[in-house]
Length: 476
Ligand code: NAD
Image 1: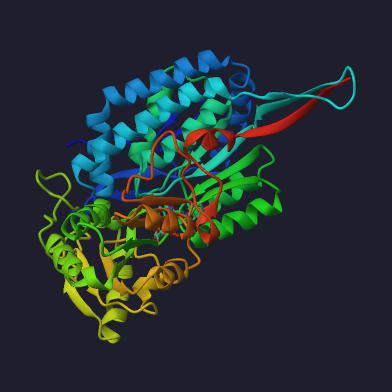
Image 2 (image 1 turned 60 degrees about the vertical axis):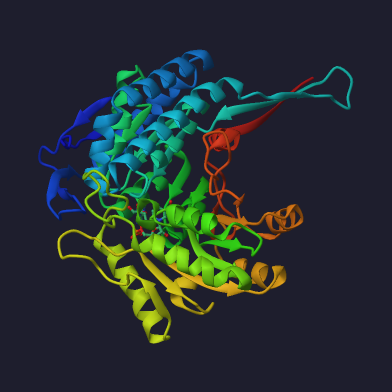
């Protein structure tokens, strides 16, 4: 498997390190350096912003049909190159190759969907109260957007922001996570090769705090889109507020899963294992707090624990591996902190509980059984392969506990009763609720949270409108 050389992309040119500072990109399965990533200097960031402003002046006037053609071509190129992009992703992020392939295919679908949806940024004519007056509501691109994407989905998170901004007619300066730069750069390369005008998409890297401060404070940028943790989201919101920039914040979650006792417990437990340990649990909508109704509790715990123990953990590049390493040492530390807290509280560790090997960042799929609501793993997002399970009595009890945290990204429930399905779907406070399903992310549907999990959506028509301003034209 080969890892591509790393660059900045500014004004249509891929720029190498030259005399710039840089940082190593590490394979989390081996701890070895894959390549050195150049950091943008302040002058590079300024050049990217200026290029974006010029790119916007061109792109906003390109017809929706022509924009759609270019964006669709980029999606096709990503599909043509999917194997190389997936391999780079597994090398830099660690997830099993099958998951990387699936993510690249999904990213191409998102981009293609936006190619089509950009043709439908309709306005409306509003009947006027005054004779002879025409009231027209139009949608205009916000201008230059700046976006920051994380390392857990190195293709999908940039695809949502690039797709939405592209289709709306905006230019973008994107700062993907420094830990997983190659995937985003290869997506950007597809856009350049598809004929996107220079400057419409720029990709920079550097010290995250310095880059975000520069890009958000610049008078050239009009919109900020961030996917990442709640604390960083809060910082970027504060910066954006100072400069009165529009924001989309897709932040962390701690998704409750409510399993009622009327379900096929074996089947639901198996589905929960597959969803929980995907990408080693480093998924913002991962099911992370399991509440199982008393009569089904023992059977669920037994089946879930057995499923976790049987997962094949290893280098994501090796065939048959179901769970790769964690993406970085910070996640290993977080797992150890949560497990130490559980041990101190006398909580039973049903499976795993420790780091595996001393090369790379491998961690055992871990199950905590009979976890009280005050345990750290129940209160803080694990963002790793750690599943706390608790039992519940009835609807009122579980709804109160499920809604008891400041997060509100995703939530799930399993039941065969229509009445319960309707009631729990309404009662759970989250941006996305899956009832008898973990599938809450699709190109066509809004993706985003409430409460401290953020605001605004990506995906669906809402993800297009995130990059459009509303204008009223009143013609007398
Ligand atoms: P972190 O808070 O250090 O960073 C989160 C992301 O923000 C990273 O991609 C990072 O590069 C970026 N970032 C950090 N400081 C920044 C700044 N000042 N300006 C712009 N970007 C900045 O956390 P981490 O250790 O990288 O990740 C772990 C936590 O992040 C998890 O607990 C999870 O809550 C959250 N996370 C959420 C998502 C998501 O999809 N919502 C994705 C990745 C990480």
